[in-house]
Length: 348
View 1 (cartoon, rainbow, N blue to C red):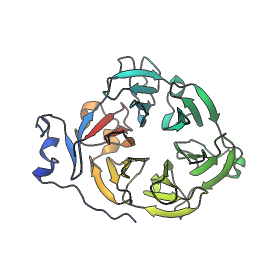
View 2 (view 1 turned 120 degrees about the vertical axis):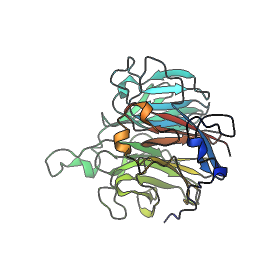
View 3 (view 1 turned 180 degrees about the vertical axis):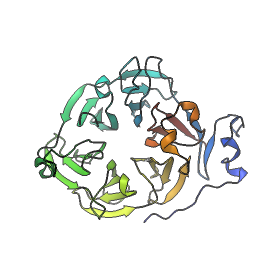
View 4 (view 1 turned 30 degrees about the horizontal axis):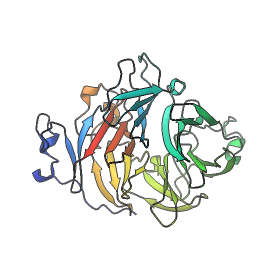
């Protein structure tokens, strides 16, 4: 079980109180809010990145950085957006580089980037079409995985006589290239394939017991320990569940209310976007460091449908994806109707 190491400090010296008030200048001379404490203090830039006028964000679901420092935002595209591209690419300074992915409009969700040899590839989840698609960094398709009819769990109809729902939300790739797909919005199983897309096994399934899942929304290959394990964001069960690479339950990690996904920095810190209005940092031993931008006592489910000027500076609404960049800064994207991308620049 996770043990909370420290909660938010509210003394003026931490930079947590005054900088959250609009118009107050922090120590860097900026009016931007500052959150965190101790060794984990961040200056927040909301609405980061120069989005071109012909693209309007829908729900911003995923974010990652490539080896060149480019930041990729995967979003569903707003209904009135002139351009339908779901993937938007920025350089490290937030300048627009390119966009692509009109076929993912409405379904853009999880994204995972992996270097294979000298080339980087994306693995993308489409919740609308029920697909996992491997692409180049420019969006050219390599292969697609569709409905898991090879799986014994999905091969027969459900109680209503219909095929089990399948809507993959995120995935991870093992050391040998095996692909682990979380059917988060479908039937709560994890599907395992080899690097060629050939079916291996199914584990998990709906329930609250050890080894069972309710909305396995995010999944990560965690290599911080002696043996690699799978961290699964068991969101509706309000916990993180860990598995061996062959699908055996290990244990639970607590301290998150609605974990969505994960990313790990090179020092072992793990960031967990929590849909219930906060971003959690955990150390390499899975102890809570901070709940950043916590606004979980607010009516965030109502706020997420409002216009951008309704969002509080320095507070999160519904964090859905997050990643570290190479310098230890954190990018957070949120499940809000108009999209929201925030950069947390680490200052200590």
